[in-house]
Structure formats: structure tokens, C-alpha cells
Image 1 (cartoon, one colour):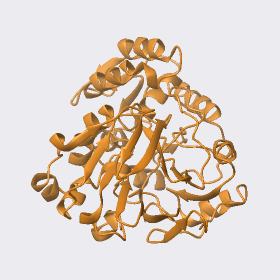
Image 2 (cartoon, rainbow, N blue to C red):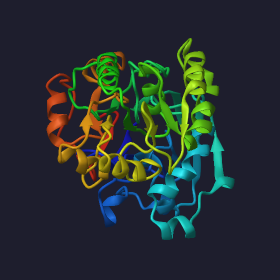
Image 3 (tube, one colour):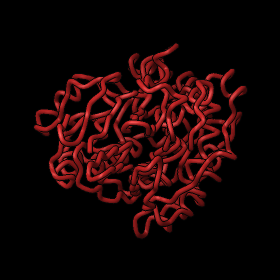
Length: 389
């Protein structure tokens, strides 16, 4: 049996992550993200299958580059099943409100009544395919997908973190094609070392500093790395504590540690003086949420700013860093080099494609993973099975 794979977004680029897998008569989409910094048609995925012929869309987690195109899918006539975890369902409306086109958000609101829930670890029957899921290590409720049909299996990592200090990642099965989270290319620096660098940077700024961060995922990684007292934007508290209640997603001891640190954190509200300690505020780029107001405020007052994730061109974080007015230390929330090599080896050293990074980075990763096809791009279609790729 062979499977068709359409690279609908995120290949040779960062953002609008989306893959369509199917066979004659059945097609499922795995993730439907947007591309921050792009405009017009390039903001959305580019599936080769017409949207109204997709049987289902499965969402790995609620970050904008994986769920932000859901309103667009509905506007294009998508009528199929929509599957995600409860945590993703709870977070997705806020993501869509922040990153979706306002006209589409209003005309095609989040379809709460159509959402089908599953739990990480469940095996799903969707359009005749057997789809296994597992915890991603990236965010609470985040998953990877392993789609199988008559002995042919495609594994789509979505966003995973093999060496997270906070979250659990389940091992993925062997497969014929691995769609790897290549967000960091061949970056060899471990998450533990990066966390130490961030803690040292914070400790050197006794008068306080601003750390923009996504509301889920990296926020808890930063809380775990904090060297002392810190503040959070008051609007984050309830959400952070809710994430910690999903104890099955966290490593042993982490729920207690994170709860104690968040309970001790100061609440900061808009209009108050900037604190004399580290301040966490979402989002990580300054494009939405409290950080969209805090980044220009901190910059105007000479309050140190540390960015720790992806910075799409044109975002406030990107602009400040380019001008030398904000520092950047990556807090890994995707696999570094050793993690991706290990994922590939555990998957049986199959054929590999990498998503969520540009051509130069994917080429460097290919120097370490011989089976990586670094020339694949969004818009390509391939066949997996008896005639692999």
C-alpha cells in the first residue's frame, strides 16, 4: 500500500506548518498553521487537495504556526472532522483571535461544537487510517501523529522536545517516512546548557528584565530555569496554573516545583512601574498579548529585554534584536541536533523530511542525517510505500 504526502506548509520555511496524507478517496490534514510575517496567500497552507475534499484535520497543539489557519480552512469550505486534545481546544480560540484575519475570525468563528477530543496516547480511526498519538514534550496537550495504512506508516513529529526539563515526550514508532521537527537545523547546544545561560543572563540584571514568551510551553521552561524571584503578567497566572494541573504531561516533581514558583511570583499589571526582577509576559515576539505593549515600554525605559524563541522578520522582537536593543538566547522548545538524530535512529533510520526551518538550516542538518531529503519544499507531493519517495 502507498500513501500520498502533500507538503502543504513549513518545508523550506518556518511557519504555516501543514501536511496532507492520504490515498485514493481519503485525505487527512495534519495541522493548519499560519506564517507570521507573510501576507496574502502565503500566510496560509497550500494543500494540493481542495480543502472541501479533506476528510479531517488533526491539530497537534494550539501555537499559531499549527492551528492559526483553522478559520481560513472553514472559509474555504472545509466540512470534515476536527480533532484535537482538550488543552488545544481550550487554547485555540485565543490563538485564532490573535493571529487570524479579523474578518475570517468573525465570519467563521472557532467551531466548538464540531471539535472531537482525544487524549495523548490514544489511537484514532480517521477516514480509515489508524493514527497513533503521543506526548510531544513541547506543550501540555501537544502530540505527534503516526498515520498507518496497510503496513505503511508516516510519522509527523509536529513540534517535539526530546530533552525538555519540564514536559514528557513519548517515543515515536518506526516508520517509512519521518517528518521531523527541524526548527533548529543542526544546533548542537542542549536545552540544559541554554537554560543555564538564560539563568546567568537574568542573574546579571539585578534591576529587572523582560522575558517575552508564548503563553504555553516555553513559559513553563523559563519558570523552571528562574534563578530567583520573578514576576508574571497577571493575565498569565490562571493559564500557567491550569497547565500544571495536567500532571501526566509533566516530568516527576515538576508539578510541585512549578506550582510553588508560580504561587510565589509577583503579579504585574499594565500601568504599574516595571518590577525590579524578571518579568514574563506573552507572546514571545511582541506581536500579540501583553508583550506587544511591554516590549516598547521596556525599550523606552532601557529595561533589559531577553528574547528566547523564533523571531519572524517584521515582528517587534525581531526589529529590536536587529537594532541591538534586545538580547537573544534560545530556550530550546524543539529538538537540537542530538535529539533529532536520536529520533531518526529510534524510528528505524527511515527516509526523512524536515519542517519548520529554512533551506540553509535544513542542509546543515542533512550533513548529520544521511536520509534527510533537504531539497523538499512546500507544494511538493511524494509517494510513500512500495516505491518509497
